[in-house]
Every structure is written in structure tokens, then in C-alpha cells.
Image 1 (cartoon, helix red, strand yellow):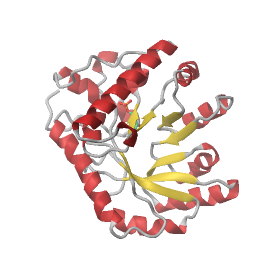
Image 2 (cartoon, rainbow, N blue to C red):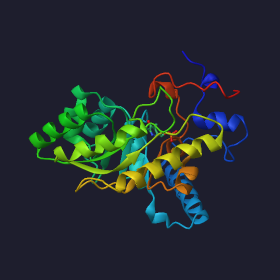
Image 3 (tube, rainbow, N blue to C red):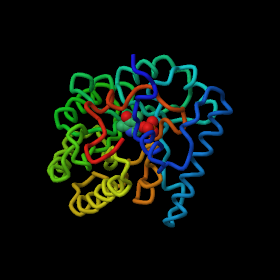
Length: 279
Ligand SMILES: *Cc1c(COP(=O)(O)O)cnc(C)c1O
């Protein structure tokens, strides 16, 4: 068993280094807790938008409910969450089935997908944010045709250069995007990234800047029907920086649901502090 004090999260590290101004992520176990946490996150989104002259409604908040149990997700729903992001397909599908009575929930799969699990995503997801393989695109499209559904997709880009991160290298993105119109059930919406796991804010910001400039470059000869408007970037520890750099979707878990006990390396294999950091 892992002792909770030894778990290092991105935000936890920053907190220890004194760069995080808010306290550790407050837990949420009542509807009121969720109302409070959601309002706090929305206020921070609005403040970040104001700093750079953006309108708050340009930024979509995607609450990330991974590891959160059904009872607490229902409380978040009561507090107004209508979109839920999940990293793992199996967990997402179980929750979708268990909560099919809730009206109007959109499930977004934001984690790496293996081709053999594409059929699950095709059944229930409204959105898939981690597309980085044409095999997966092909499998999704085939199953979506079968289901008579379509799916919003984001192309995941590895902007940090960390081997532990999924996603395409930036220089692979153009050719990849040219191939996507063949998969007619996929509606390409934009790009997604995870910033470097670093306490150095300028390194984190560089990742977001790279995603935005890559979008500008790709938009110049995007194939017909491919819309690259969206930039999904920013999580609990870095969403304000992401908004300053143009995020249109922020994926926020812990700042809404409370600190998670599962270390990030469960989601990003080998995610560990990089060697340039003192922790
Ligand atoms: C868990 C997760 C998030 C949210 O992280 P928090 O630290 O909980 O805000 C965002 N994106 C992806 C891909 C995730 O797996």
C-alpha cells in the first residue's frame, strides 16, 4: 500500500514548492461541496480569461471524474455537472451503465485507447480526446457506423517530449490530420495535450504555446470538414496558464472532486518527476 504522503501529483509538487497559491484540493462529499468547488473553479476560469481579454464562455469546463464513485458523481450531477471525463474506458463504461438514468450527461473519454476497446467507446462516448493512432480511428469509425453514431474527437499531441506521454509528435500531426476525413463518423474538433509534469511554470506554459501554434499551422491546410478550433489543455494544477495561452477546454478533476489517491503514473505510465526538479 502506498502511503498518501509519498504520492506526488503535479499540483502537490507545486504546492510543496510554494508555487500553488490555493490550499490542497478540498474534498467534496456533499452537493454543497460540489456547488462550492465548481463555483471556485469557474471563478478562476473567469479571472484567467479576464487577464488575457477572453470571454469566459470561450472556455468549456470538463469535470474529470476518474476514481470517483457513483454516489459522489451523482452529487456532482445534482450540483450541475453535465459532462464527465474519464481516463479509462472500462471505468467510463461501467459508470455510463450505472448512471444511464441521469438525463443529458455527455461522457468524454480522455485517456489512451487500445484498438480492441474502440467498440466500447463507440457505444457510449460523446467525445474522445486522445486520438493518436489511425488504427484506433479506423476501429472507432467502423464501430460507429455499426452503431449509427458519430463521435467528436481531439487529436492528442505530445508537447512535452516526455516519453511517458501518449500523443503524436508535433511533426507527425499534419499527415495524421490529412488522413482523418476517410473516417466519416469522426468529427474532428481540435487538439489535446498534457503539459510537462514540472514545477517550472515556464516549461508548462511552453507546452501550451506549442499546441496553440501547431493549431495555427495545421489550420492553414486542414482538409475539408476538419475543424481544428478546440484546444483541450490544462488540468487542476495548470488550467489558468492553459487559459492564458488559449485553451478552449480545460479538464479538471481534483479541484472539483478533491485530491485523488491514485498516483498519476497509473494514467501516464512511468510519469515521474523529471530529473531537472528537486522534490
Ligand atoms: C486525470 C486527468 C485530468 C485531470 O487531472 P486533475 O489533476 O484531476 O485535474 C486531465 N486530463 C487527463 C487526460 C487526465 O487523465
